[in-house]
Length: 130
Image (cartoon, rainbow, N blue to C red; front, side, top):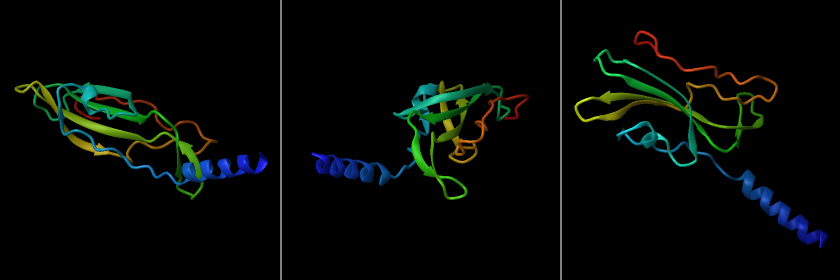
């Protein structure tokens, strides 16, 4: 019984460790904010304001993976973290829709060091500046 348990745990750990994370594709157009949030992700923060000076309210959102995953940090240590993405969406008033104009998988710092506080504070648009 002990050997069977060791074999099962070895296989389970090997499968978990062998998983690779890849960022999902984001829709390029949508009617509302949830259209841009892929399955397994959630909105962490959002801000609204006119980013492209067209008189229409645009959106910037930070989405976060719902589950923690193992990733290598900047010094090569494997840590548990929740990946984040910054999405910039311009509103098209004529079509009553949003268009994805920018996606960054690295702009929002990851909380990849257990000894530090989460580096993310907030998202804001003030006078057209993110």
